[in-house]
Length: 462
Ligand code: 4AD
Ligand code: MG
Image 1: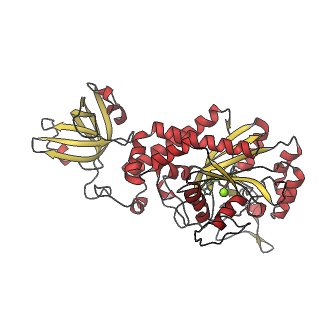
Image 2: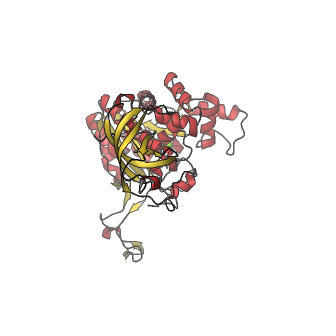
Image 3: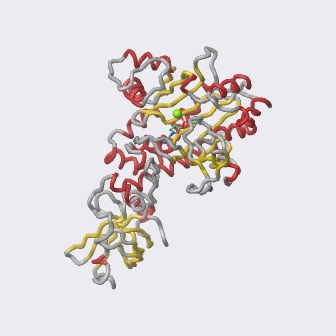
């Protein structure tokens, strides 16, 4: 019976005849005339140790030449092991080689490679301990996301990837076109967009929120979970040009309900990963970021601190820290400011709310003070902003005015305004960047190492 190495490593498998299939991590030949082969199949961090005896038919011809990275199908009996870090091992009755990885060419030899180097081998890096563990945690966070929202009665909605509207109004969109770039059709000195595939300009989405709102104002509670694209020229360890976002949107919700939901959702995911990815988390704790599990545990046990933007600015202007960008009321907080608040001042997650309207998107609800909007960002140590959200402007006149002030044309957003024209309701939502969540749970420092194939300015390999 073919079983996973995760299963084969369980003490309950002892005594079973079984087959495992995977890739060779190491081979060691003993003077006693047998070999130890460590095999991994990605089902868990740990390898299964195979004992291949000299009496096997292909022992001399194949097994003693078995190189790292080769694929194998091994049949045998699972026995108790006295070896360190394993409770079982397999005594092979057959070692079948499916594909050799040449010892001279295979890049992932025993020597440790830097994460930068491994990015050049993004097609092979999931075969390393770190990237296997990241993939399993990322998978679990995705699964936990669906579980959390489904258990709470949210409907999963698929919003479009190709869109005609700029949700964040920030103009950082990738254009989608089939026009020949070396021979653009022109009318009156301008590109004739009517000849493009959709008959007008279209883009890759920066967020599914606006379309999500149409479903929330019909079905109550929805969430989206898909890829988003931003043509933002940021070369940082927290920005990607393609990343995955989870965006819940709730009708009859106000900003405080939104904060409570965001906190429950983050805690749910953390609890889930600590419970179901214990072995991988132990690896991150030992090899990537000592202290990461205790920090996550603390998050579970502590209510998130809530601070208004105004309070945050006060803290930042009164503290002794020297910032590169000076702080005053009205500025967009920089990463260094966010990190001071969450890492030094609060030392845990913090929800910042009520930002100046000038620095936030047009759709956020204007507060009674007329200078701030009901925005909320969740900041966490090490990563900074992990969630961005708000209560939405549900008043038609105020929204129309805010759009004009932001330089947007009301007629381009007629359908969005209709939601306020026909049965408008207070509603709210937020977006969580999945990669930032993976960074936060694993302690991985660069966002390019928590997505299988990172896309960033100047870099789109594979
Ligand atoms: O704060 P943002 O821009 O919010 C929105 O897009 C809203 N429409 C969400 C909503 O209210 N439904 O982005 C949300 C989150 C950020 O907090 C961050 O975690 C992540 O998306 N994010 C990025 N992650 C990786 N690379 C980038 N370039 C990112 N930009 C935003
Ligand atoms: Mg934001």
